[in-house]
Image (tube, rainbow, N blue to C red; front, side, top):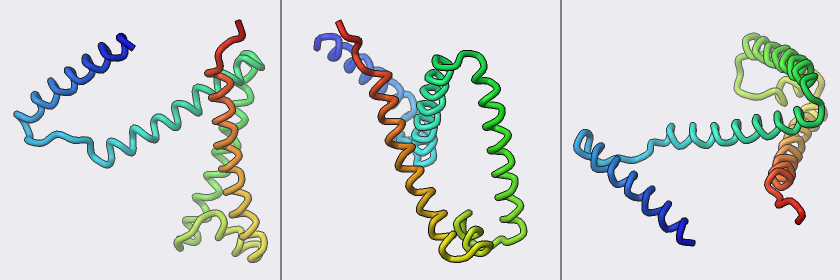
Length: 139
């Protein structure tokens, strides 16, 4: 508890110092929407990238590099195909709309919902991985 007070005092002193320093230059200081967005994106990408990489390396060793290269190649092919479709059909929409135009309404509907379900499973997986990585070892 005492350490938390010391840390919070140090942080508040640093913040106050920077506010005074910046206030003399431009007036009121604050974080912009873009800065906040980039902090959020960096947190999400960093946590997923480093956590996923550490789990994969601990399970498979250095051979995980081959798996990452294959996944990167597949991602490149998918995004190149999506970019090509967007160039040929520049209307507003996503991959779901391309599936609907190519294969019909049912496939477009299923494609959109499968993407949503995959996102939900991705969130659940990240929560489980965070719980595994932050658990306390048994004594």
